[in-house]
Amino acid sequence: MAVILFVISLGGIFVSSIQSSTPTPDNNSTATQTPNVTSSPAIEALGKLAVKGRAPKTGYDREQFGGEWSRQGTCNMRDKILARDMANVVYRSGTDCDVIRGTLNDPYTGKTIQFVRGQGTSDDVQIDHVVALSNAWQTGAQQLTQEQREQLYNDPLELLAVDGPANNQKGDGDAATWLPPNKSYRCRYVARQIAVKLKYTLWVTPAEHDAIQRVLGACPDQKLPNISW
Image 1 (spheres, rainbow, N blue to C red):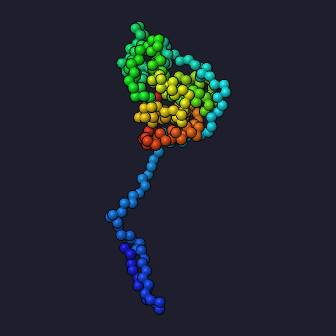
Image 2 (cartoon, rainbow, N blue to C red):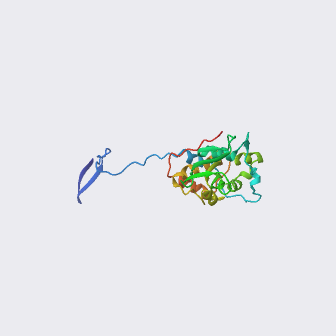
Image 3 (cartoon, rainbow, N blue to C red):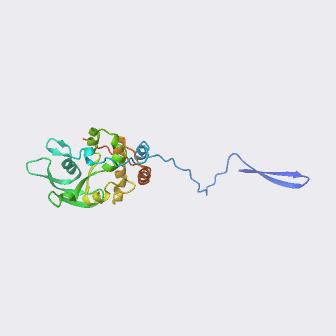
């Protein structure tokens, strides 16, 4: 409430308004308080990664990561990931891990792929390193031991069964140069990249950081995956 004071002086009457310390509520006001914005677990994790430029690609070769699928008993990691990520899995007769058929609901494209193992068809479904090995090499993996790089190569957290052509299109791209065409999967995709980079003490480039941050802006509750065997 305002108090109006009338002051009489030689020069005339002056009107002064003094605002009360208790303002009158304005029921028609459209002003709102800015809500408290909390970072998602994925955004907070992104903030823990170092941000710097790429190291030279000098010396990069898949052999630096072992270049082969590890084996657990008679099963190799490719078959284990196929079995994990596909439905309606059929194994070769007499085995419990040689996947010959299955149905993949591809996270990268959103397509349903009927996988059949064989010449000319096996590559329809490929096992992607979510953090491309070349990207890993240029963002800290050079400083890992050979054993650590081989662990990264075969880590279930790093591996995903996906559409072969989409994986070929991705190549060595990071989040700044390639994202899954299936937009509904992008938040989980970049969260998984963060998880891998945290686990192996890799860094992100400025462009990569900003691209991941933009994606996560659409999913404020995104968590990091917890994938292990």
